[in-house]
Amino acid sequence: MGFEKKILCIGAGYVGGPTMAMIAHKCPQYRVTIVDINPDRIAQWNSDNLPIYEPGLDKVVKEARGKNLFFSTEIEKGIRESEIIFVSVNTPTKTFGAGAGMAADLQYWDKTARQIREHSASHKIIVEKSTLPVKTAQAMERILTINDNAVRFDVLSNPEFLAEGTAIKDLEDPDRVLIGSRETPSGLKARNELVEIYANWIPRERIITSNIWSSELSKLVANAFLAQRISSINSISALCEKTDAEITEVARAVGMDRRVGDKFLNASIGFGGSCFKKDILNLVYLCRYYDLKEVAQYWEGVVKINEYQKERFVLNMLNAMFNTLAGKRVCLFGFAFKANTGDTRESPAIFVAKRLLEEKAELVITDPQALDNAMRDLEGVDGKVSFNEEPYVAVDGCDAVAVMTEWDVYTGLDFERIYRSMAKPAFIFDGRNILDHKGLYEIGFNVFPIGKPALTHF
Ligand code: NAD
Ligand code: UGA
Image (cartoon, rainbow, N blue to C red):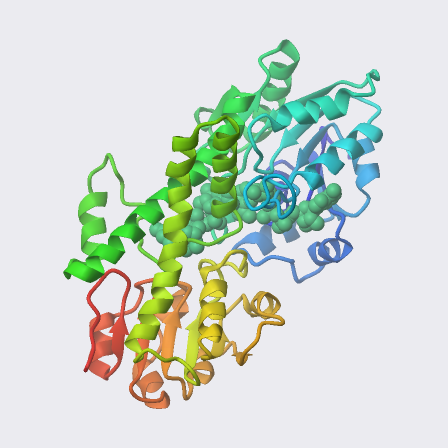
């Protein structure tokens, strides 16, 4: 059967894989190909064990794969054959040279732009799916048109707002889809083509359009606002611990004001994930570049509070356990940066684990999905670490439990059994406030939530 459109996505990661699988699933009339330079990743996408854990993803991929959804390493062929190319390569924080530790590293992006230019013989729409600094589309246009050949390119910005763990739901029913374009006849035509793709399943009033720079900036700002809420509530959690106020009560009272809203007000050990820190630092770098020192400082504060919150958690543990952790066994409940994903990029658990090892604690790490990544993250780190998927086995003989990830499974555990198997005095540090603190205290634990008074037997 002939397909109405041939769509390519370069980059088969946490964004490229699920977003393109959703387009293929919703639009059987289009042929969707996802390519990547990493042959192992492509082999996994073509296997029964997908490279990422995401609830509902298996079903969507397996239904479309081989029909109108294809995973391949043939990037050049893909470019030649497609009309619309999404680019979803990684854009990590730069680790070298100017802007190191702040600016986005655009090397993968730049290489892709050159590759597209080299292998295109007909008009193409290029869609920025990766999160990028403002004005990247301009750089892309310049790279694409440098040869001055007859091929025309239209570059669009279409940032992705999915969150890991809920990616399929977010893609199926997004709050909004944002498409930015040049406001030229050709830019507007390209933009309408992309609108038509999403309109296959998303109500038109939720597909919003803007100029291309607003679109690029909106993505950075959306992440900065979300992270800012977490840093705001986490900063207040520190004050609650000093004043006997309870952070969940404060969050409820504040969040019930509809102007504030109740989402993203869960105090925690700090936010993680591959994007919040990277995107805020990117925003900070842009502000500095444009000499907006005060604005840069304001947003940098969000990252600083997050670092503070992680360190505060470790110091609270140290303080509670009589100022020494040397030789004590600590079980980390969870290692993923949030529940329902195996992703550990920038997970606060990495920071906590390294700090506890510096204090010479012995670690046992349990997580339902993230142990492979946890092992990689802690490879070569000095100290005693072991891994066990089974929480009851992991916690056996430990002095303390520290909850790092809000997996549902941890709330349903038999804590009387856990208490019996642990060394005494037994401690629980609930970095996610998901456990029944009073119940645990009554069992015999010394309980340290975030932003609430500790419950101790001393
Ligand atoms: P990822 O690292 O999981 O995936 C990127 C993929 O691109 C990798 O598989 C890599 O091998 C591939 N790649 C790199 N250079 C390539 C090239 N030249 N040719 C072909 N493939 C290449 O990253 P991700 O989490 O999917 O993020 C991608 C982008 O989306 C980032 O800009 C990120 O900020 C943004 N984003 C991520 C999320 C998320 O939840 N992870 C959400 C929204 C936006
Ligand atoms: C986030 C955004 O929510 C997405 O909209 C965005 O597309 C994505 O970043 C991105 O650009 O990568 P994600 O990082 O996958 O998604 O997950 P979130 O649900 O935002 O959680 C991020 C971190 O904040 C996690 O560590 C989570 O545990 C923490 N968090 C979240 C809190 O500590 N408290 C909260 O109330 C909410």
